[in-house]
Length: 56
Image (cartoon, rainbow, N blue to C red):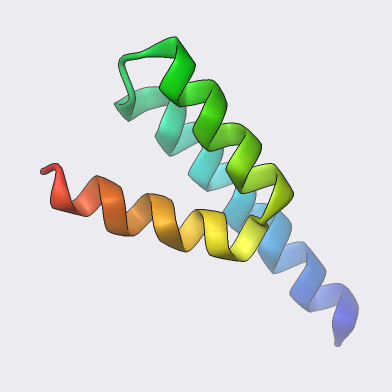
């Protein structure tokens, strides 16, 4: 069960990083978001989707 959760978190992190790379124009902001997502995978991914949805 823990392995499945780990795989799902990894997939979510990868998809979030791809989304950040495609939507964020500034390289500094891209790198900052990627660092946040890597250090805090679940919280960082959720934060990115909340912030990015407000900008649409």
